[in-house]
Image 1: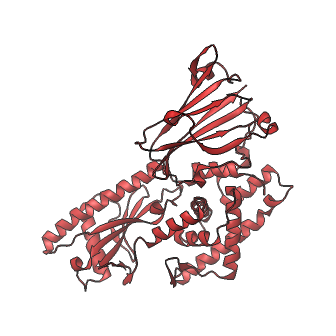
Image 2: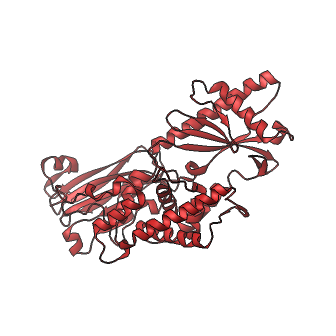
Image 3: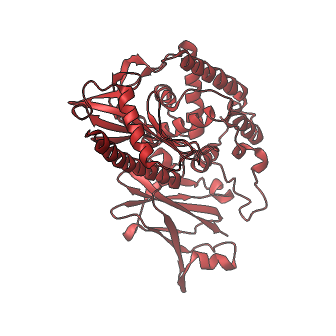
Length: 445
């Protein structure tokens, strides 16, 4: 299969994963509206001689699972389970009444909204003018058992799906999360398409997942498996309760047939990428037709007019590793790589000072890389040294593995052994999550 794995890494990082500032904004809106709910309930209770009180809240859905993706319409949502004790709201209180109580409490505090907080079948929704919305799914707890307020009270653990997905990631690796996000990008690639939601896609991506070293192969063959699976049956069951279908209405089944048809059509049209005669332009055109995204327009690819003309910037090499495939990515902090360049008889200089006056570093210099970050300690730093160019190819020394620091204070020592437009990346890992990353170019004459 034509290798565009580095393109996929770029597409995934820059155009698929939701930027951290937007996730932070969603979580701030969640916190703000939980505070509004508490305050509004206090007013409601005072007027109605009641004592309703939120016992707990849990983040759910794609934000909690870290599978939320970018979209042009800013239609981002965060799902929150709002939990009451049954003793608090009353054993006989119906789902419509409790959702209306929550909506009433929010309306008291959500002023100047174009649309007031509204009770829907499965949630109470708060909509923002910029396209964001917060969905409060209402639950009651009886002992250790939870019930969701839909059209009726139905037993459902608000954290079961999150826990199932996390277990799946632990079994199959972080690439599964990438595949789910890329699947969502396909399903949202045309406004006219009516496709299944994120949970159904996550379930089938997990069921049909094929593990390849390269992310483009992993995605392509997982999608092929999904088509084969849907040709057998479009039925999808809740992964935490196999007795319950996720297809509740005919509309849900129509969406499954839409997904099967669209996915089958696009994969059939792009079969050229698995042929030995496939060109880079054909591969780009195939993925452009698949994702309908300007990133894949071949006219945007430039392999000239740069001091890095020998670099095919978006190509990977055998054995290259990507941090997205090893750790969850949640870039809450910043990082910057500094590099000190030294040689016998010369005082150390910053790489940035040297490159102000020349385009390339001399050979046979010692390089000491350090990572400056605002991540609170403790954490660890991982590094990726990627050699690029004709000499790296001739010596079969592209490297590209993710490795540990080899000097005190999380620093990494290297040398300028041979020419090429190489690059170095660093990743800050805290509590098993990559929370900051940085990159620096290292052009050697």
